Image 1 (cartoon, helix red, strand yellow):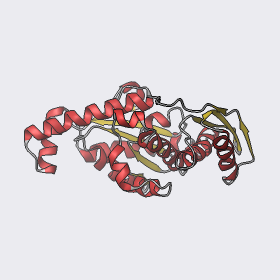
Image 2: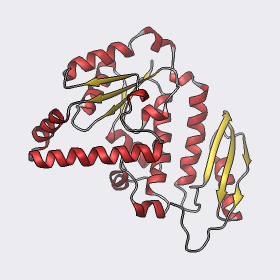
Image 3: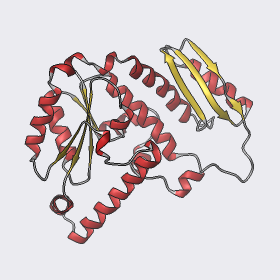
Image 4: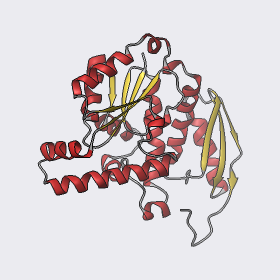
Length: 277
């Protein structure tokens, strides 16, 4: 039982390690392919994911509701859903931040020296040294900005992890053995994320928020959905009209297992010519 989150630098072999650990433990893996399939169930298509996946929002996206905000709410919903199933390896997706404080979750970061990362890119992608260097710097900048903007934290801050592993010192198989051994420890068999009331409530509320965000009839970017007791929702924030307020409340009540919805939504019509950044 348990959940392993892996944050990784490009060229650190973190993706390969995550896959191997999942195979070693016979656990499920939330990687790019599985995430794309799960996001599709929310109506988020592969092309849109590739546009915004783990990238900082552009100025245009900040002006116009959203590809990034919709993506973020879908991502949170999927990460929470996977964690509730237990026995999962979650690659990236801010898993270490989203699941902070949840018992049974082990948060690992995989890094490597820049020269080794560059050599791996040259070998694996067949690109020039100069292109590999620029690619690494660009990717690092994007993920740093993405983490700061969406999670209000510094990308790679070791304080956000239980373990940081350098694949410049350890090969892939050594890292896989270490992580598999950690996840087999007795405390993880006793501390199941699926038993966490906090995670159950987070997952329940986030599924409704993602549903609101993907409904074209409403601008849900100003709505906050909370659940302190499973089945009971609280809606806070702003909407653009009375119709949107009623629709948001109606959509929320339509989800399975929703017992009650308390709404403090405030109607605030948008000011012409002004967009929140």
